[in-house]
Length: 109
Figure 1 (cartoon, one colour):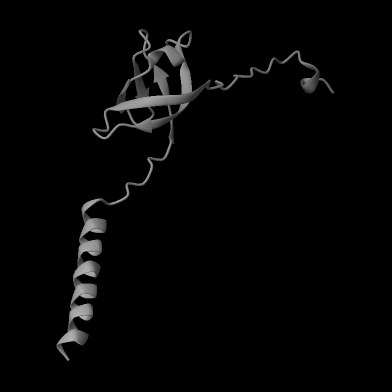
Figure 2 (tube, rainbow, N blue to C red):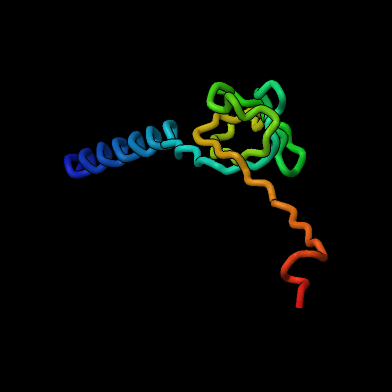
């Protein structure tokens, strides 16, 4: 009877140890990329989002030449949520304003 309990006890101890190891080292999920739109500052180091959130840019070289423009960036937020790492950026297209003139062909009948 004692010989039958020894393998069972060893199996329980090894299962408990494996369970504890899995809990101590959880697998962290990769951070997802997010899209933020806003205006890039004149120095190109900060982005002011649509909700007036200010984001420090960890790699401003990616945005060189777009200073002061409305842009949309695909980025990864840092853990402290105050800076971003930019993967991709594109210049936002501003809406064109159309002005109708009474002399246009649309008004002639």
